[in-house]
Length: 110
Length: 109
Image 1 (cartoon, rainbow over the protein chains, first blue to last red):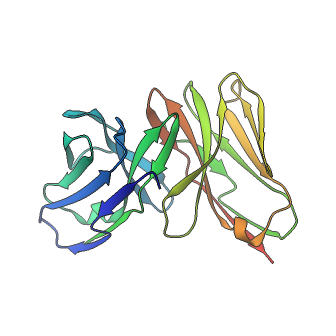
Image 2 (tube, chains in turn blue, orange):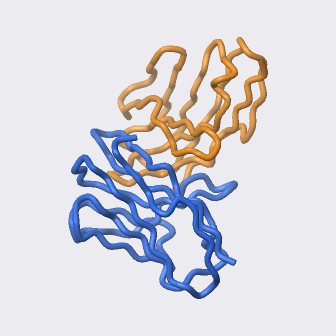
């Protein structure tokens, strides 16, 4: 698992509330990614980071923000959660040319 | 969207048979990778093929790549019940990865 953990693993929240998901890695990898996985869509990139304080948008970034103040932590924030953001969220890193994934966070927005 | 498509969406075979799944993508790539996902888990890397390669083998896996058609195929030979999972292709475009929609494989013992 390349030392990747995600927290929380499960969360239920209400529409309009802020939510922050955390990805933590222990092996000092430069690149970190946030994806969402939905039935029929596979994995879609939300944001990624290529270093501390260096981030860029993916193809489904609307409604999400990220921060990376330390190499080991990459935070994904939903400023005001909506039901369309109900999904499974995966964090990943790159080692060599291969991505390694965290265990995922299942988020339900009611 | 730069996301790829996989075909078929679902595949059910008997143990011992071969399973073939296909991936089409939209852009020029550095490499193409295949990943496997067991239910409720994160994706696990299986095999990588570079844009200048046409075929690659790893154990019971065989991957082909046709860059002129922007397509790839994954063959799993002599399938086992433990191969039951979803399989995704992913294209590497400058450190951004675009995943296909996945093929759900069921291997019946």
